[in-house]
Image (cartoon, rainbow, N blue to C red; front, side, top):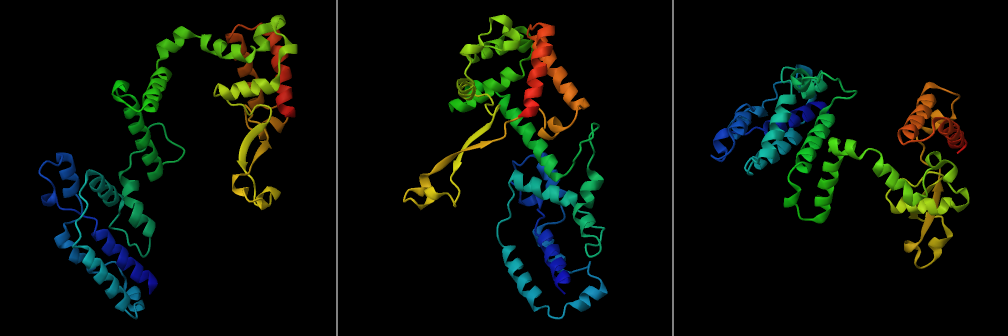
Length: 312
């Protein structure tokens, strides 16, 4: 009984989605007119949707008391007098819903095919097949495209300052010619406040002047990942913490220490020698050599570094 009622309600709700092009503003884009014309029907024709044509005989007999449906339908009919949203966003959303349906399918037998069959038939998979393709992935891709378009607009027009800085950062990231011209200089400049990198400094590096606590603090101030030797964060004290008994317990926070951030997955580091760990080590060697290190010295130094990371 409840399945039949549900189908009846869903069918009527779907019939409330359609729009009519003659209710659109004359200035509405032609493409949006075509979309609205392709939808199911106008509001004047929505009364036909009250006929539950998809219910089979068994389902019809299962409805012992149609009063609930009649009451709900009457409530839905009242909502038809409300102005229908005809903004471009609503029209596009309605078109997406209509295109996703497979009205030839029986929702009582295969509701998934009824709700999503149209999308499966109309969707064109990209040449570079994604691991997951869904409505959510399409929405995510659409958001990325909109963000890219926003970031590529002229930054001089933007006024809060953080938007201006964000667009400048994006432009610097896609300035491939400028990146090639600068080479490794930005990396070397970033290493100087940290005391340099022993792999590059060689014998000139002063180990006695190195303080790992000061270095982690400097990494944080420079905006880099500072969870290298240990993960450090400030969180609210848990409920069982004794400080919660104090009157100002809501203001109590604690410093949390956790495992550090690794270059590759912790599970991979704990495994015996494997191709992933080998490629990781080779990547470190290549980076050091590109920055001007001595190949023999960097091989030994980074070998110790890889072992130390495994111990962490």
